Image (tube, rainbow, N blue to C red; front, side, top):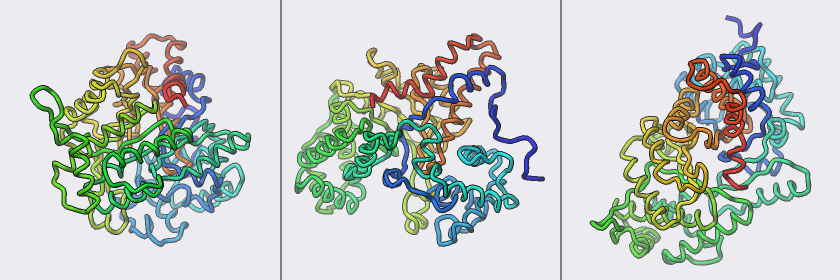
Length: 486
């Protein structure tokens, strides 16, 4: 079959099945700016306005989605994360792409070739690899295809990166100065990701991080109060530099134990956390109970800081990481060997949010669920902690990781619609390391418009374009702009 198309696969009405869907997308969604409030872009690359030598560097480096597909297609590791040349890696992806039919990678690949490169007359395959390699590389050499150039082309208003508390934020500060001087319009704000503050299950990692934290704060951390004080000083530094969100990556929420009166048992106190901290810094063995209690207490303290600083807190939970020990040892984390986890999520999540609410320390919160079996658990949990003051204060986050595809996004929105308020949803994000991932916002907006229009076709929603258009524009952009208070 020819890979040169008479009719583009990615066309102006891609995924839009009715005239109403087309009208909703083109009138109310298409031209809105992008607020990408959670991503893993390198702020250094934005600060440097990095230019990429070729399509592999911007498209395949760090992309564990593509690596998983390539491995499944029999592609050797050297073409994924190894020492093959960039052209060899690209050719292996071109060889794999036709085998991704019905995988979201097929849509993403061709959406990203369409925007920003303008390639929609060919499907990626070994037969088109030469022409796509040459055409994309020629455009990447142009100024408007640098990191900042692509952000401008894609109408990116603001992005939030993901940053360790010990980061200096020097690149964010440089970008902010250039924003103020009018040399760059897209804002790039940090998000505090303090996962290593909970990492007592990895003693060497935890000790090294605590020592680095102390050095950053010009103090020696010897006890739990000093530990929390140092973290709070980093919160203040991040806040000064525009941070308004934290992000917390969890397998599951840690579970606390309550006594007969509903109060925390002593092992979840600060005093107990102090004992565990000192043992961890001395590399003394810890029990699973000590680890869990320390993680609960510390996460609780972090969330109290989120409230104090007026930030939104994000919880990404449900991942089972680094399943393949051999490849984890060889390649490290985030290499494509993670999957969806399971376990008991409801009780721990409920108790965690409830303890914050009891203290009136529960800030704006987004819950990103990776296991679709838990969608209704999350959807019903939201209503338990809405406060009647902040609209949509507790959010069901968009389809994440293995769920940021058409079925996953529709399932998340259907669950939210049934159990909460879709119109208060803060919408999509890229969760990506690539400057080419912004079409995921377009993908989401098309899916949203099509979902609503099909409900109209079935008689489930009124055929009121103004009413539906307000929902589309709010979920696509305006809700995020108002919710995060950037």
